[in-house]
Image (cartoon, rainbow, N blue to C red; front, side, top):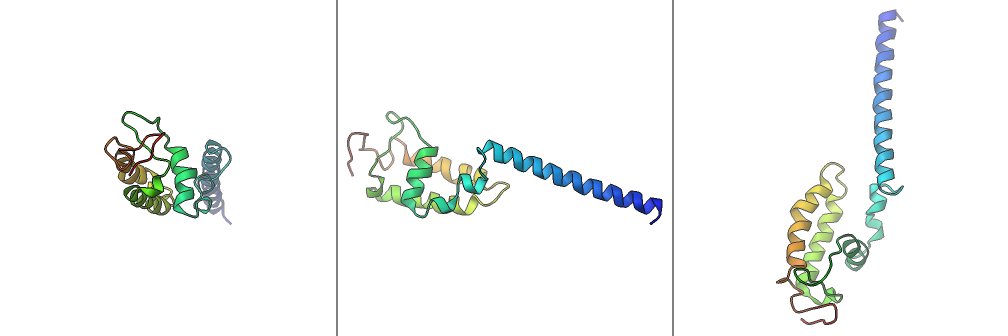
Length: 137
């Protein structure tokens, strides 16, 4: 190999190595920010085999709000048909969008979660007659 070809080859190898190191650093930062879990493990679909487990273990744990005033929730949410339909739509869209590494969750937050939270937890939403002490349809 001539010196020119050798230099080009070495430059290409160095460039590829730098890109791989950058990807490894980004992956390590992501892993560290998730407490050592990958994004799939942190929000793992396998952890939520049904709507009930997703609502209990992910939705309620992640999007908790202090109840009263403008925020309402009912521990018997499964008995509120509107809430079930809305939560099921959120779960299905979350399962699909969370796999998009670029804009998936951001899109889910903006287009799905945020508008639904306003209705689901709102003072005029499906839990309007419920309180932490009382369930009423």
